[in-house]
Image 1 (cartoon, rainbow, N blue to C red):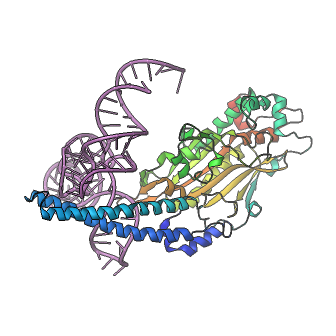
Image 2: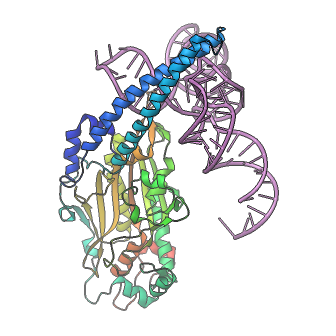
Image 3: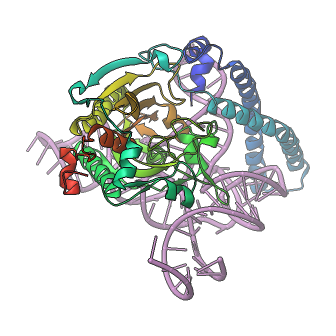
Length: 427
RNA sequence: GGAGAGGUGGCGGAGUGGUCGAUCGCGCCUGACUUGAAAUCAGGUGAAUCCUUGCGGAUUCCGUGGGUUCAAAUCCCACCCUCUCCGCCA
């Protein structure tokens, strides 16, 4: 959520920055107008309230001083109090209504792109920052896509999972399940070593949590909702982990807070029919190790760079070729101020595919979730900055391992760093 | 799911209609005393919004939302959450 004060005081600057996401896509005019009305009402209402409080006190004093509750003097005050009550009953709903409208409009506005985010219209304009591991890119002759490898080895079952659930669900079997589990353990171990505190959060979350991290209200159709309850299946561990500290005031000395979490993620992938529909790339349920940071605003840019490096470290350890993209303003996620995507090399596609997305939300989520910190000895509070990134998506990593490590005899080598987890060298 | 108890400031814990944003204790901060610390003493110590150039002022917040009243932490209604016992269960 953007700071209403910032919009009020610098509307032109806010407009300019929002336009970087797409010219004219967002209009703050109504917010500015409603905010003006709301403040006028608030001033009026607060003055009435003040007089009403005064009357309340006066009546109390008079009665204590010996006047009868039904004496003329007291009755006159009561009458005035009743009058004010009538006028307040008019103003209050108006003000509340305005506030609700403003809130709804604010929740629908995306974050301002950071000054450093490259300006562009679409993913075409994303900027490649660096590439790693070209020497590990396999020869392209006779390569199979990962779903064929998985089926041949009998470690991924697509058809049976569809019977059990729906299309875009899979079942991992035997060594496939073990490899999935090994990847999870390996990534968690690495990230814990890098300083992240592991969490196993709830996999169902309420609407308030989804609103704080900004999946709601705009992207409701992307998540699975439990019909009987105000509970949703998490689309990413970002939601429960970020919301761990919702409505809290942290001590400055507690920052930074680093968490990692392995969770399954559930996404409806609405509107994605027919796209990337083979294999492990786009499923309704997938596993992910997520990194989440809560940091002091002055450090968040550096923390973001470090977060990306922590995600990259996994790909490097697995010797999977990848590149780092800096997303342009036109491709930037709703809540992000700045975002790097990691893309891993998928030989079957002959291209890089997203395997991690590392975003700095600055105070956007913190504002929505009311996550603040207090500086020692100083009055008031500030919003923390939140960041998160995949470290990494497990299913896509599995796909990348199967394809990049396949051998001409149809077997798949196990990356060295996973061998201790799997206790074997070949699939 | 049933019965009972309860939700007040960082913590503990008062407060059952009136000047209560809330006694008090602990914690924390500042100052005095001290070579320093402890102890002691004095003062201070929540958040948010609006008005104001500033000084400052006003309003809101005692789980949440309604209601009664001139006036609600306090009374009424609904809901949420926590604890204890029972039931059920991995």
